[in-house]
Image (cartoon, rainbow, N blue to C red):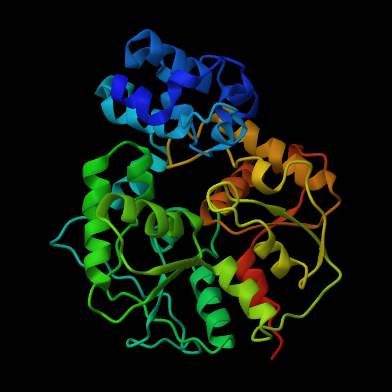
Length: 373
């Protein structure tokens, strides 16, 4: 435990409680807070005592407000890795999505990954720009009862890249990025997926990875180099690419008078500091109204890694939907497939109880629909 305390800077914790105030999980579970996790570690208490370890969404808000520089998310991740099987979480959707990573890590399987393409989309198998699609095709199968338009996200991404003169490459057989396995503390599975994905692009002429999912981008940009060394690849989110295209005059969007508000995905805003770029896109498609919590201190969607998606998580999501409605916006836009699903699920089951409902939409799909021909 001493090595973990040293690596995360936990010994510098002064117990001020700022992390707990910012923590979405602490607002859901009285038995959990980042400070309690640190106190248990410093006192050498058993790992299972912090039974709320899986309540943590790894959103990073705690670390952002910590004046002592403690890396709380990494501590939780490592404690999950060391915890006993008795403390394993309850997987949402019968564990189908958590098993997708294990299935795609099998070297004997070649997952089909481009069945969503339509004839109007232009791709180039020799392009040096790879569009990494991630697990959205699996989400489409499992979560279609919540959103039946998830495959419009990769389609919209290709359409937008085409509009900027880019014909991206797609991997013939694409595997999960391993983001959820990493934060679950399953280092072996994460490394298997990281190695397979990096090997798939090695020597192929690919120079840049573009991902519409902030978690996929985070895995390629931050986690893979940390685990395997430099990949030599440029990694960007679609939000960055779109904002750059707008600034260069390569992408023209049709402005509208609809009012919109934006849900900042944790890996996009806190994780990568990408706050302005998606808003530059949104402002060309409507009038932006900010929620009270936005940018780097935006409210989390309440669930991560398809685990512990219980009634308390729904309360967090409904609170966020309430904030969106309070802005007077007609549409809540996000740039993360998981935020889209989680918030849509809460609205589907509990939306009628909200004071004011909003439509929920993906940034890339909205931008593609706004393209000027």
